[in-house]
Image 1: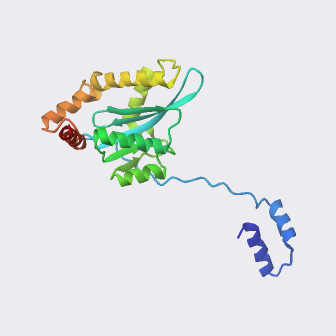
Image 2: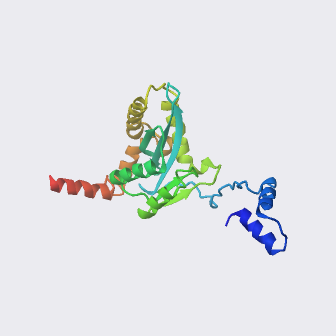
Image 3: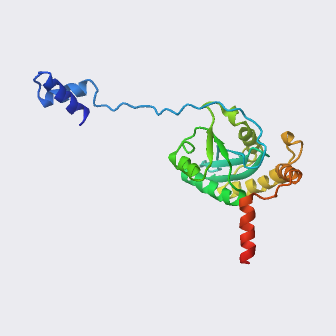
Length: 236
């Protein structure tokens, strides 16, 4: 039953004899026919300390960035890193990136990298969507949301974003997405394998990961990826 019908029924029950048209007229004059806009409230976010993970795939971080092509058309990037060694896992570049594309990118990463325990994100619509939440639940991955307006709580990827902005997005004028992707892929290769990182003791992310895996007697590939390579060799 609509609001107007409820008012009509109520005053009739109270003995006020107004016809339906009169109720309708007063209902509109009072503005009761206008739908109230309610602001969606985010669940309460708990402040979590930004600590250095102790192993690969313990915590990933992801975030969006925006920029513009030469023709004025806007595009987005989805940046994902492993907080353990600040390694760039991927930078997805599209004109638009929905929550469905986010899960597709993550699915591909799981095949290559293995499954993270946690993924740290902000409260953007693509990250708070049921699509991402359901995907994480089905893969046994926990989402850690930072508090609204507190980007420092996602400090590892915020620092990375500044570097990517300075070295690529602000350094070039792009004719199309193809140029953005090529330059980004070349930059990721250099960043992961060669670029010294102060917080990693002056070595590159891949070097840091391999050094610690050798010291700890760990395999150089995630277990999931190792098993895939074994299976592939058996087939061949």
